[in-house]
Length: 79
Image (cartoon, rainbow, N blue to C red; front, top):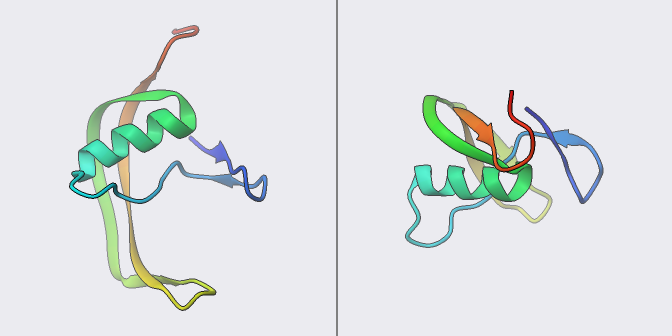
């Protein structure tokens, strides 16, 4: 699933930053609901590679990771 980014209109995976004190699961549930209107049902897998880092224009460098999750639409039509 991709969302359309509001800053540049491109497709992207839902994601974002942790709130202080938030777990990975809580962050995934919140961000996916906020950005895509999808309720997370279960975690499928966590994907990471310590060699993968992203450098931002402001000098910040982060090691990224992605989670694979199963979700259902919140409201609206369901199949």
